[in-house]
Image 1 (cartoon, rainbow, N blue to C red):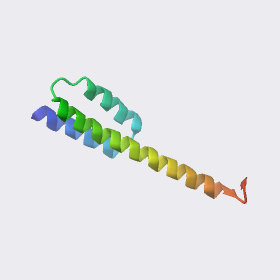
Image 2 (cartoon, helix red, strand yellow):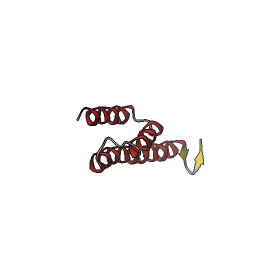
Image 3 (cartoon, rainbow, N blue to C red):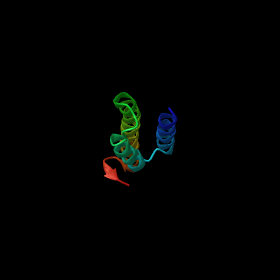
Image 4 (cartoon, rainbow, N blue to C red):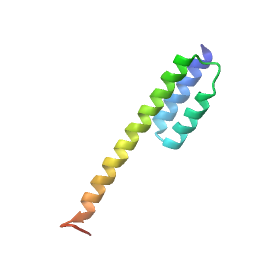
Length: 77
């Protein structure tokens, strides 16, 4: 169980850091982790995938809000 706890801590840290590149790297590492059961690996990968998707949606919303702020009357200010 010590390895699973270490993996969970690494996933937690990657999610808190909120950097998609690092979360993707950890997804790849987990794909090759033979010490975890298939279910354990899947659960941790899903946590990362959800965090990546949420960050992507958040970035899109910020980009749209920024564009809306910059455009007034149909032209970029």
